[in-house]
Amino acid sequence: MEEKEINETEPVIDAVNNAENAPEVETEPISELDQLKADLADQKDKFLRLLAEFENFKRRTAKERIDLIQTAGKDVIVSLLDVLDDCDRAEKQLNTSDDIVVQREGIQLVFNKIRSTMQAKGLVAMESVNKDFNVELHEAITEIPAANNKMKGKVVDEVTKGYFLNDKIIRFAKVVVGK
Image 1: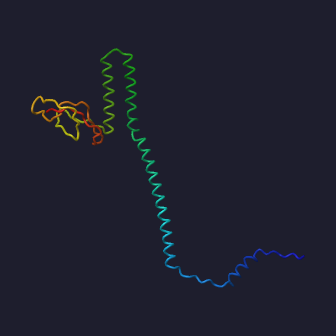
Image 2: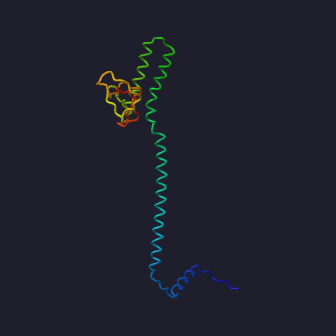
């Protein structure tokens, strides 16, 4: 038996020769229907990608919103930690000292510190007493006879103080109105 020499280039040469001898296939122009089907498939693909991108956007923004809500009060809490430390020191001082003047002074310092901390964060107390009653700012708890005609329709007493946070009402003042 004779051994044939194996030539690795033979299959490649055969494929090239066969391609040259093959009859030419005429390419038919793409029909309008096929073109529309291709365009529709392309638009469908773009739509699905856009829809997936929008769903990812919604998921991402929902997650960011939840994270923001969970950490929104963090800086306020951190700023109040100093006040909490002062409260702990005041409580310790109350338990060890009997001097009422010193205790009152210490507690007043804590109150002032919490007020200044809240004001630094944008909290402003609403001034209501002796002002005209305003339904957009006040919640009337009761009406009492006014001491004089000047006090009719005005706030006589404030039961619960109202507050603004950065010029937006966060709590209405509960007031007593003169009639």
